[in-house]
Length: 281
Ligand code: UTP
Image (tube, rainbow, N blue to C red; front, side, top):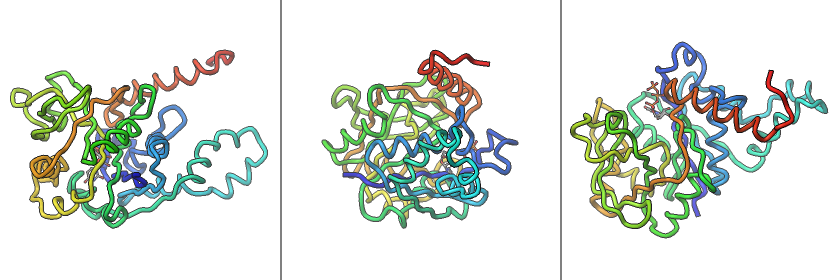
């Protein structure tokens, strides 16, 4: 049973400047809900109710979001506006939230290593909230938990991307084990297009076994001088097994403008499809 999910949210979100100058990227709303809330919902649905954030300076709004807002809540108490808080209140009731800070932005691997103090010695989920996933039939992290139950090893979610986009992702090479599931031989972080071993890109959903922390602690900086989670996973793949899972569903890269706008349109349409009698003004 995996009970903890780690959210690295310390990044600067430079691609969204100036919006992210004073506001965390993870608080940007897709329709009326911040990105981070979609991620926490997914973790909760996968049974991970202990939510751990690796946060940083300028990210206080995330802590405030998962807390009471007394004055506001008092003001709207008993009004129709209160309905809009139902989902976040349910999350706050079901989950616990803990925080630690990454002091220097030294990459995703460093952010995950910083989270050890909140995770301890147990397998855990990782969600990068700017990858907004809509699972087909079942949330993506829940799909991965099922695979973990069978194989008990680290798992990365993968997606086929156009070959010319491989340089934006960690790319795996591997052998097909069963439908949608690959045994990873190796991973390369953001390879030049002609050096990419495949077009299977790692996206922002992971299940990691806790020995990843030992590996991360001893890892030298990799691509772009950052501590790369893909380098640590390469060590695990050689020592034991890492799986790449081609998830069922769709993903929006909300760390980029195009993905953010596509997600906004998609979720807005979903919202109105479920309320056919309302007109859109
Ligand atoms: P990204 O590189 O996609 O996010 O990191 P970013 O740095 O916030 O955005 P840009 O590139 O400047 O626009 C992927 C995830 O890893 C976290 C980020 O918060 C994001 O969720 N991250 C990255 C950290 O927490 N710490 C780091 O040192 C690096």
